[in-house]
Length: 225
Image 1 (cartoon, rainbow, N blue to C red):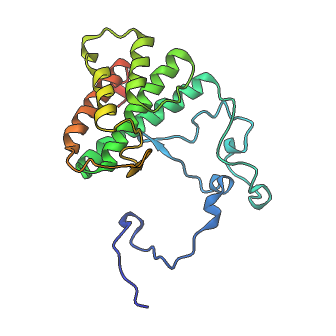
Image 2 (tube, rainbow, N blue to C red):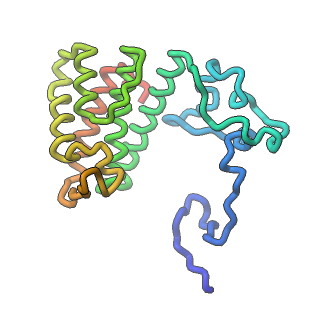
Image 3 (cartoon, rainbow, N blue to C red):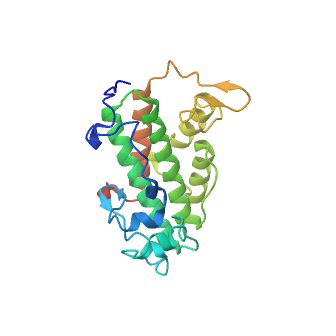
């Protein structure tokens, strides 16, 4: 059968083919330790992130001598992180989603994926700020409910925060229709489907970006972004 150049995934050098064998070792966290790589959060290497909380774990080691022997000893999660490490993790996730949203607005300004990432950035921002205040992570996904909690816990009265909570409530009600996975999937509960084919993604992105700027300023992180 003739091979076709699909011109996908150019950042990997156009060398991938559907006929290539999947590299199975990549599915095991332990094997990754020896690759000497790390995710980036807002441009910074995160290999030492929360290292104090996981100091006795395999994930804190620089190298595994016998990968096969301990291939299933670690799954990429840890328990009982210290409060400060949890806060730092959430902060870094938030900043990285903001970073990705900013770049997607430039490269894919009309994409549903762009607005999904922006929405996720706002959700993580609310949860990060609530964690700092209460010491707990709220499991809600509705931006309106999270905004209500945020405004209540911090007793928000800053003029620049006006309408943020109202926008989040109305957006969740009249665009997402109560489905917090609206841009993530095309189908939702009760046999409802995506019908946002007339939405102005750039306009929504503008509002999301403005809310994020307000939350960043409130969190006193202006200089870190």
